[in-house]
Amino acid sequence: MMDNKTNEKIRAYFEYLLDNSTAAAPMWNKERILYGVPNKWNYIDGCMITAVLALYEMTGEERYFQFAKDFVDFFVKEDGHIETYNVKEHNIDNVNAARNLFYIYDKTGDEKYKTAITQVRSQLDSMPRTKEGNFWHKNIYPWQVWLDGLYMAQPFYMQYETRFNHMENCLDSIHQFENVVRLMKDPKTGLYYHGYDESREMYWADKETGCSPNFWVRAIGWFCMALVDTASVIDESLYYEFRFLTKTLEELVDALQPYQDKSGMFWQV
Image (cartoon, rainbow, N blue to C red; front, side, top):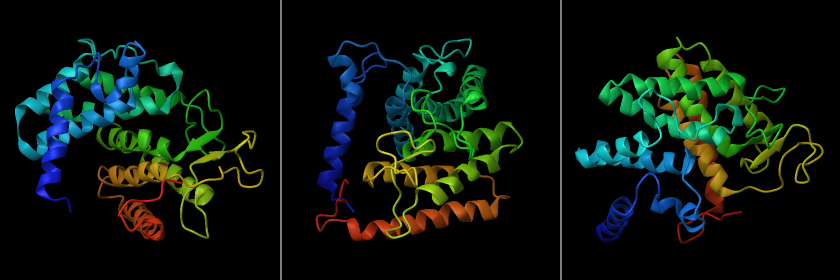
């Protein structure tokens, strides 16, 4: 656990970011500011707004919710259209930010957020898939599955299906996790390779397995959180599927332990 002094420093930095950020120019996505590129709907902002909403839940301070809502409203217009978001781009990263819309919809009851949720959900209907059934990472990365893509799409997918679609495709979400375990898990270490290319055409893809050559702890972290966040929104009737997600997480956390430095940090590659 972190000491109080460290916690205070983190909180102060967080407040600094919020005080100096707008949806048009967020400090945590500084590359866009430096290069003079207009901000657009993206997963980096989505993750940060998830953190802001979590802080609101912890503290009850209304200013955090208001910041998150104002940020989202910069993109989500009154008719529910998401400015700068393009379904046909088929970028799995762009699904992530829509997770925050569930929370804001529940708190406000404003139907524009549900309309926006439905717009993002429509991307998954036309999203290209591997032959095994997993979403491609992006149109520009055909036949590829990346660990981070599970985090970007599956918690949203599971939550939508559970809440708004009578759980029709919940097992499809689970199946995509099962494919990752089967195709991307290293049997020797228990770790997961960052990428998988079903076509075996990418220069980094092993011609036999289709996997990339390295274990990347950031990608493994994304996958851990995909398991956590998907399990947190799955319906209780899917007990065995829930246990599959939690067991997969437990095994992965155990597999990571030998790669933790004495400082407490994990090796990056």
